[in-house]
Every structure is written in structure tokens, then in C-alpha cells.
Length: 199
Image (cartoon, rainbow, N blue to C red; front, side, top):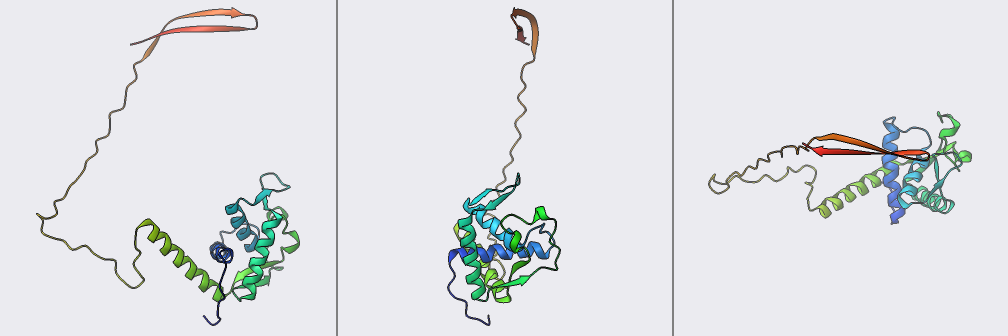
């Protein structure tokens, strides 16, 4: 990396990882409506349970406290050179109902990862994947190395055990036959008693 990266807070690391994921969707053409920033904010706010119902049915928006947290994290990453603000005024912005809420005045700007930011986000993603693999008890082989292969011993030392699970036969319920009916009339409704017996 060409620039020294300052120590990042957990929120800033989370934002970098979410922006990397959202930008990949954007590059693949799978991001529908909104800006990259609004999608990342929604992911982070949803994860924390910091969303509120929006003025339109079925839509949500981040609460104003989390919007401030998000804006400060973005500003620090821009200052560190990991994010870049860019005008998207000429880009297709979709229809007004796709813009999101509390973002109407800012829909002509968006944030993008710089090269350093993308490298840092990829490094964080690898670190997170390695941590999850270690927590699961599996070890991922490093790039450029082949996975370990178990050596085969003599046939008598390791017998092959096979298990065959036979499906259970379906349980047949005995058929019921109606043997009689009896109706009792009440004011406004009727109750029907049905007598059955199993065969």
C-alpha cells in the first residue's frame, strides 16, 4: 500500500467490509436503486436493529443517531484515504421511490472505495474468514500450497466401514368409516355429531 493506514475502529472495519460487498454487487449490475452509501448504511443499521418505519409502507430508514455514527465513520475513512466521495449527478438514479429516505438531498453524491481501501477491505475479509475457519475448527490452506493429503496405510490397518440407512416404511393410519350422524338444533346454529369407527 502506498499510504500508511491508521488504526481502524470496529465500526470502520465493518463499514469497509460492507462497502466491499455492496460495490461488488454494483459492479455486477445487481444493485437495484439507491446509492452504495445508502445500501451500506441499511446493512449496518439492520444488523444493529437501528431501523425505523419510513413514511412509505414497507420501507425502513436508519434512525438519526445511527445516521450520525455512519457519517462520522465515512468522514474518518475519507480522511484516511480509504474512501472517496464522488458526484453521481449524471448517473441513472432510478425513480424517486427508489432513492431511500433521509437521502433525498444527498442523492447526487456517493462514496467509493479507493485502491488502498479495497486492499484493506480484502485483507480484513481474509482475516475474518480465517478467524471464522479457526472458530469452526477447520484450517484453510494458504494460497499457493496444496491441502494436506492423508497417507494410505495397509488395507488391514484401516478397514472400510460403510453404513446403509434403510428408510422407515410409512406409517399407515387405519381408515375411519362414518357410522352415523346426529344433529342438534340450537337457536341460530346447528351442531352435527359424527360417529366414526376405525377399520
